[in-house]
Amino acid sequence: MSATSNPVDVHVGNRIRLRRTLLGMSQERLGNALGLTFQQVQKYERGRNRVGASRLYDLACVLDVPVGFFFADLPAQAGNANQPDTGNAPGMGEPAAALLSPALPTVAQDDLALLSQRETIELVRAYYGIEDSGTRRRVLDLVRSMGAS
Image (tube, rainbow, N blue to C red; front, side):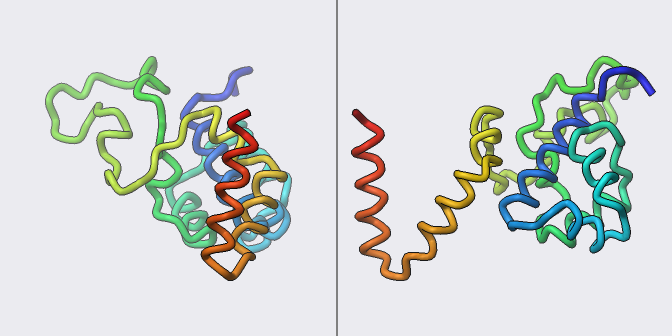
């Protein structure tokens, strides 16, 4: 294996970690659901090990997302250096983003890092723990006004 991971594998790993943390799931719990050790989950999340198609499908089922979620926001140039020439075959050689459902949200890399932080996840959970929608709206307005200074 080369010293550096493939950018696509790193991206997919980041998306696995993002979804797992948003669900409040530990690496151990995800590994148990997949019949893996938490160390193997770590390797997937870091992009050190490539995720096979059947394992990616299993991850999508356990994490309750479509398979395309793992490729959302994949930079068009990621991994293109070693791709074979596919000519004009439909659907071949196109950037992954072109093949995804337009319904998938796009997230900038900086936003992805913010969304993966424990503090962000705790804040979102606490926010949605507020049952009254009017109160939630006022909290959102308050936080926005504090951030604008």
